Every structure is written in C-alpha cells, then in structure tokens.
Length: 304
Ligand SMILES: Cc1cc2nc3c(=O)[nH]c(=O)nc-3n(C[C@H](O)[C@H](O)[C@H](O)COP(=O)(O)OP(=O)(O)OC[C@H]3O[C@@H](n4cnc5c(N)ncnc54)[C@H](O)[C@@H]3O)c2cc1C
Image 1 (cartoon, rainbow, N blue to C red):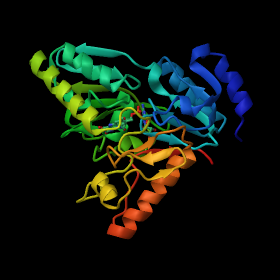
Image 2 (cartoon, helix red, strand yellow):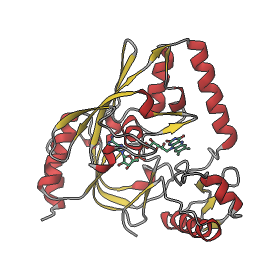
Image 3 (cartoon, rainbow, N blue to C red):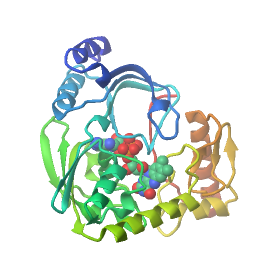
C-alpha cells in the first residue's frame, strides 16, 4: 500500500531541509516552465541519501521519477503523484588525466567547461546542452555530429534492486536519444568520459562557434525543451513542420517557434496543456500531409 505520510516522516529523519520539498511546483524545475506540483521532491546530496530514499520509496510503494535539470521534460498541470528524485545535488566534477568523472547531477555544460579548462578535447558538442550528466547519458544527448556515446567510458547506476552497477559504453546500449538507462529505469549516479589531450584555443574556438550557431538558429530567449520531436528516419522534424505551414502555430501560451520549427516554445505563460495541444496538432498535421509519425523526444509525465 502506498503511504505518502509515513514516507514523508521517514525521509525527514535523514535528509537535510534543502534535500526535501513537499508540494513543489514542477514549473520551477522544468526548462519549459510548466507543470503542477509533485507530492514530494528529494534532491539528495550523496549517493547514500539517494539509495536510502529509494529504499523507503520502494518500501512504501510510492511511484517515483528520476530527473536532472528538467530540460527535456513536460510535467502535466495536475502535477506528479509520488516522488520526484532530482539528481542535481550530485554535481561534483573530477579531472583525472584525460578522463572526467562527474556526478549524475553535474551540469553537462559545466563538465564541458572543465574539459576546456584542462585542454581536453571531445566534449565540445556538449557545451551548449542544458541538462545534467545523468540526463545526457539516459538520452544519449548529442549535437553537431557528437554524442555521449562517442566519449563515455562507463556509468555507475543504481538498478531496480538498488544495487550499484558499473556499465561500460557497450553495456549502456546507447543509440539515437535512447539508452539502457531508460529501458531498465536505472539511475545514473556517476559517469566517466574519456577525452583526448587537445589545444585550449582550438577547443574554445569550437565551443564558441557551436554556441554561436545555437544562438543564431534556436529560440533560446523562450522557455522550451529544445527539439520537441525526434528526427524521423530520412527526414528532419523541423523541416516537415515548417513545410506543413505550422511555424507560428499557437494554442494558448504555447507556439511552434517562428525561428526554428522543431522547437515548441512557451511564449506567454503556457500551461502544460497548451504545450501538449500544440504537440498533438503538429503530430496530426504532419502525419496527414506527409504520412510521417513524429515521436516526441521530450518526456511527458504526471496527470492532467
Ligand atoms: C534550449 C535547449 C537545447 C537543447 N539542445 C539539445 C541538444 O542539442 N541535444 C540534445 O540531445 N538535447 C538537447 N536538449 C534537451 C536536453 O537538454 C537533453 O535531453 C538533456 O540531456 C536532458 O538532461 P536533463 O538533466 O535536463 O534531463 P531531464 O529533462 O531531467 O530528464 C530527461 C530524461 O532523462 C532521465 N534522467 C535524467 N537524469 C537521470 C539520471 N541521473 N539517471 C537516469 N535517468 C535520468 C529522466 O528520467 C528523463 O527520462 C536541449 C534542451 C533545451 C531546453
């Protein structure tokens, strides 16, 4: 039987005040700035506290969801019944010769910056992706011809039985915006990236150039979750949406970006419902016009 009240009492016995929130509005934790409250949010500052929290969550049979920075996430307006485990407290970044070991909740762009500061090459593609290391491994995040799969050596994860397991690059089954982490509901607590010694100025130049391109092409001045849809085999989602005449399509406060049709944006206090209506309309129209199914890249959780 699910027992939220007992879970809350037990979590309070070992978590610090800033590791535990109740009825927390998820719009404060998603880059889309949408989403109703979750019953409980745990932001553990150590692996121990993460595992102890998971033990209790399982004991009291409460649903849970793992998140990083919420940069690929829509939480519906009714919020999430259960526990959101937000990993951003595990945010250390260590450099060991040509390797970087980072906590699952470390910012990916800070990790890329650490690579730059140590003249390590390979993370340039990641410097403008606004998520965490764990979220990037789960999603096999990528951009401008690079992806996590190219640089990861291993990830330490907590499995469904609460064992800590270390998975190699091969064992992580990384493919386009997909990994074993998603299939098996693993929690990424740490990852190791294998980089190469490079030239500081060249790495910096490359990062600046990629971020300049992002700024030029993407509507970064509005809340969004980046590309809303996955790239369908043989097509580009943005091009299909543009060709379907959907640039600027609006519902409530959500809109298909005029600047980049692959982005749905929150242009004026959108609710999650507004965003989801735009997504549905885009999927329906693109299917009717071109017979192509657009799958969301963005994860959608919670209740209406
Ligand atoms: C402006 C903008 C630009 C973007 N550009 C890109 C881009 O170029 N390329 C790209 O790939 N993505 C891009 N994204 C999407 C997003 O940043 C990535 O998908 C990122 O990897 C998500 O990380 P997160 O920590 O925010 O994950 P969240 O959004 O919090 O979660 C996403 C998924 O990952 C899972 N997850 C998160 N953390 C963990 C963990 N520690 N262990 C297990 N599972 C976990 C969640 O359960 C969920 O399924 C962009 C987003 C924005 C807003």
